[in-house]
Length: 472
Image 1 (cartoon, rainbow, N blue to C red):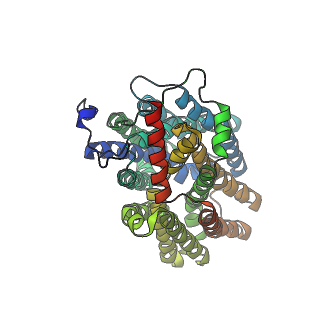
Image 2 (cartoon, rainbow, N blue to C red):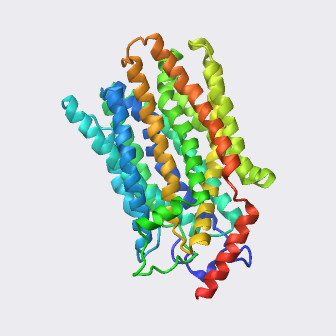
């Protein structure tokens, strides 16, 4: 893209309103490709890491549950700290996009380490898992929070934001499809030449190399057109701002929305392999069960621009959650055994389609709390706001990772053995009933308490533009 696209004289406005710019095709592709690349690795964690730890690396489910819980507790400190750091500094090359470039290679290296299985004693292996898993999540935060915040200063045009975020999430879910197919299948193929554990590591290495290359290219396509407010050296962002922002209604409700959506996703992802292997008695279908979730999510994302024009953003969110509730309940209703695998796949596909709608709209509306924070406080703390809403994702990983493993442990789960009736019942309830309940509760919370609509967003943007003009 070079200097031409970053030259203000080449920027095209879509309206006379402040910050309404047209996004170039290469810029949209570059921005969106970053999440495709991130999901090549991150979905490996969401879809398979629990199964990898218990059935391949040999860790006990209870210890895996504790690992996830400790990691999420650390996230409550690390994530706001990272968001605050982003708002306290202004790198010369750009406000947010540079973190993607800086974090690319370290994230790839640690991903490979996380799927490595050193031949050590049990305690040493558990420590290894704790260190590599937490480093991976910290580097994910280092990249993803500034990356998501960059959208708020690329353009203010909601249609352009929706177009870019829909493209982003289509590619993100496509990355998940690639991961769902590649990790188990290529790892299985490589067992002709090495152990299954080594196959997982080599497959992750291949995907990490591809990821790093895309992150380095995509980060340079981002154009930050809307200048962030100058940093006051006597009033830099700090802990006080974190607590002030989290108390804002739209920010907190969006956090709860993220919590609900990603809890559904994390539970479905964590339990998928167990459900197919032990409840459906169809171990050979594990990769297909994971793939169909991601494949139908890819089909759901492109529907979002049409839906937002017809039923607006809030109703689009509620529709996506409704699909997730229905699909999860279908999975719960399926009888045990391979004869019901078609019905299980149908339920999984419906969940995937709803999840795709949510992914397409979630990252379009996430800039609304940033606008609200700016309008309410006078500070456009995009990274802090996104960090706080993104904590919903991290808390969801506690529920989606720790809860299933803790329940399996208490029910008497033993890896690679015929499971008892209590374990089979737990697997069924965790995979189907719990996500359905979470979806219904999230529908109620969001429908009742989220008050920002399109007209209110336009008013906020107008007020912010007038205030900024007075500052100048």
